[in-house]
Image (cartoon, rainbow, N blue to C red; front, side, top):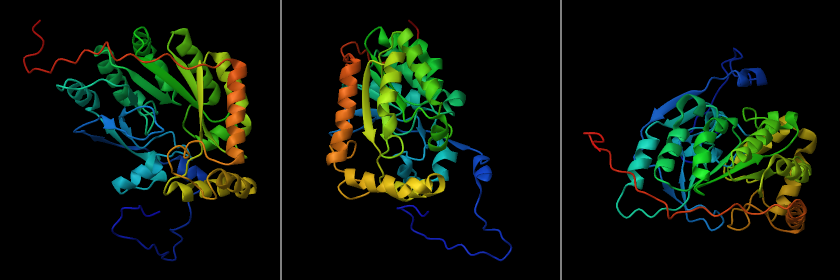
Length: 344
């Protein structure tokens, strides 16, 4: 699929030798991941969206190996001249100097601390994190600076960093939300082929609570006629595992994702495809996606209202609350790095 920012288009012709046969699932699954290392000039991004609570974010990676069919971040790969489809999950970029740049930005005179969402566009704890450890290195910088951080992940690799999270939690400096879409392993394997299985995410919630790390569950995305039936069951299972807070997000289909999602539905659930899209359009004002603030994550109309009521009633019955506020008053700016090292 051509990207939105391509200046050239390509037309492919079959030469008669059968070289353009579509790839089957086995061929797609055997594609190798290409990781390009890049040096970032800055890593703290500022956000002014009124429906996103975090005003700052750091993304150690671009692209995501989890390969979630519904990922709202897929269209961001078009900015790189790459496909939001297979390129997004197989051609990744690792910001190998992210921790160093983060430290320098926190040390700037006049920096005002505010919670940082770590890995908010693409998952900071996707499989490649086990090799590079960039998200962990950023956590170490934030811990040393006593800086608040918020994390959303579906990657079990976060378990390796519970020591850092526990240290941050002792000073009320961290929130973690674990994203769960369904409790059906087969459906999850199709939707999120390289993410941790649902039960592994529930075990991660339990491990975080055992370490006294504030943790919530994010039911996301909710897909009508496909995953919405699991809403209450996810909330119940996550609460039993120790989740203290909960949220949900309706399926979002920005830009190229509209086409990719329809292709995925036709490939995996052709008998449901029309119903899924019809219900989704009812919740997005008759369109595949309503990008307006306040509506893009929740939708509108009777079906969206019913979903909100189901969520609210279940949360009230289970006793979900909100995570404790993150502190900013403990922040200590990192000392600028010196070629002479630390003398004292």
